[in-house]
Structures are given as structure tokens and as C-alpha cells.
Amino acid sequence: MDNLENLKNVWQNQPETGLNYTKEDIHNMVKKKSTSIVKWILIISIIEFLLPYVLLLFTDLKTEDKVYSEYGLDKLTPYYTTVYVIIILGFIFLFYRNYRNISADNSIKDLLADILKTRKTVKYYIYCNLFLFGIMGIHFFYASLKSEAYLNTVPENANITVIWVVAVVLWGLFILLLWFFYRVIYGFFLKKLLRNYEELQKRE
Image 1 (tube, rainbow, N blue to C red):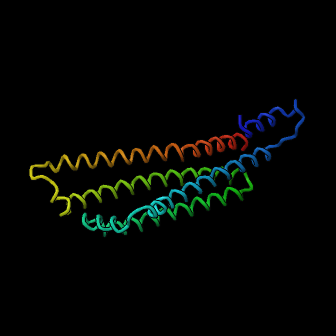
Image 2: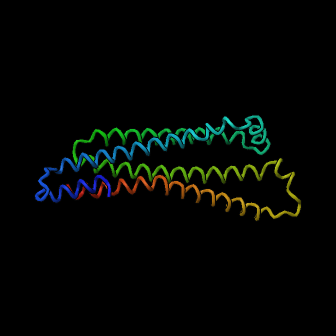
Image 3: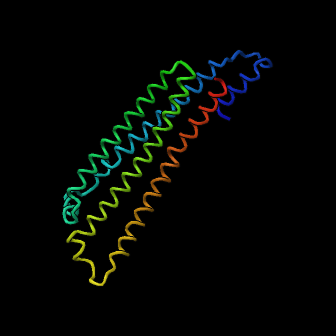
């Protein structure tokens, strides 16, 4: 049983224990736990944003640029990179603002509202990322399969439709795997925020 649950039980049984824990004590405990949760959401989103750039340090950029150019991806990559950076930085700012709001809340009503707002922000972040990667993957596959470099390697009797279906299915599996990752990581924190929200509702 966690600290919040222990404190709640003490508060409910204070006539027997003699300890004078109030609704404000419960509020402060939930506030502290919620602040910590949102801080971790912010940290993970920053790590997720920086990870691709860290991986670039171990990548042969000249070879990568050559491949992108051959398959017609050199013009698409900067566009999607820019969109990705703008979107992720926007969400990181929202997570930071949620963190500041929750840590500064002085009433149960405000804390309830900001917990709900944080949960919605995380869900929008997940949906937006999945949508962006889905569109980007389809666009990249289309450009690659239409490029001269790829067409020169395809046998004349190859079924292009089958190739397309396989490509889309493989990318769909990647998106599903990404969704599962978000579900495990961010879902863990969303469940904790939901428990905090439900606990505060009992005190409101």
C-alpha cells in the first residue's frame, strides 16, 4: 500500500488513532504525487525528443544522405523533421506548463482540473505522434517505391501491389509497436494520475 493510501486510512480512522490529519493533508499529498508524475512525463518526453539526435552521432551521415537522395527522400526528410520538432517542442512546453500549474495549485478544484488537462495532453501527444509517423511512413514508402533507384532493382514480373501491401503492413506493425510502447510508458503515469483524481473527488 502506498503512502497516499496509508495517509487516507489514517485520516479516515483519526478518532481511533488520535492523529489530526485533515482534508488539506490529503490534498497536499495528492498534489505532491501528481507533481512528481507530471515531472516524469516531462522528462520522458524530452528524452524521447533527444534520442534520435543522439543516435545520429553514431550514424554515417554521408551514406545516409546519399541513400536518401537516391530514393527521393532528401526533400521529404527536412520537411517532416521540422514538423516533428515543432510538434514535440509544443507538447514539451505544454507538459512543462502542466507541471508548473499542478505544483502551484492551492485548491482541490484547480488540482482536479489540471490533472484532467494533463491526462488529455498526454493522450493528444500519443495520438499526434502515431498519426505523424503513420503519414510520414506512407509518404516515404511512396517516394521510395517510385524512385528510379528502387525501380531499377525490381524484376519486371514483380507485383507492385503486393510490395505496397507488405510495406504498409510492416509499417502498420511498427505503429502498433509504438502504440504499445506509449501504452506501457505513458499509460503507467496516466493510471496514477487517474487514481489521484479519483481520490481528490472523494474529498471535494
